[in-house]
Image (tube, rainbow, N blue to C red; front, side, top):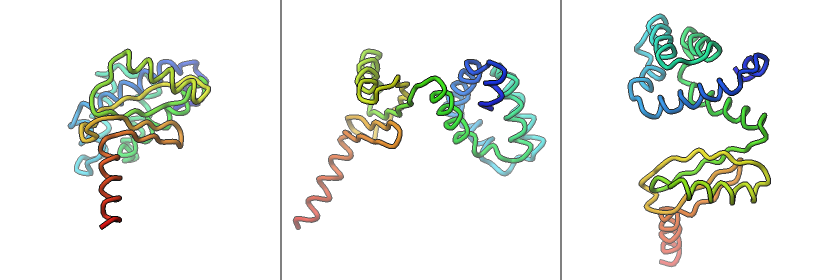
Length: 168
């Protein structure tokens, strides 16, 4: 997908398609069921994913890739494919992706400050992928490349729990 879009000069369109599919997968239980369930046949899955691609207004490259994946019964790897294509686009642009998990949604000011701090630390432009996980109680989990910084209350409580087990 990346190479085809690069050859056609359509990387921006592909990036938009990837973001739209990510959002759709996060928001739709039915779409997640469609890509993961073996109940649906090849033809049903291909027709359904084609209809989803048309309804979302996805580009030719993305639509054809989705149909081919449905035909070959490989839609279950769609989330991994989206992450990989997003990483390739970011590398091509000279960006690095940072996955941010927080207990509550970050404000735009917090995102901007975090992006600026990470850019200074990494030395490259940083693109934030922010998600919310209320089980963290508070704090953040930041993943940039192979580095992870966990400042969540949940992690601190687990550390304290393990420390208390060692003492007793």
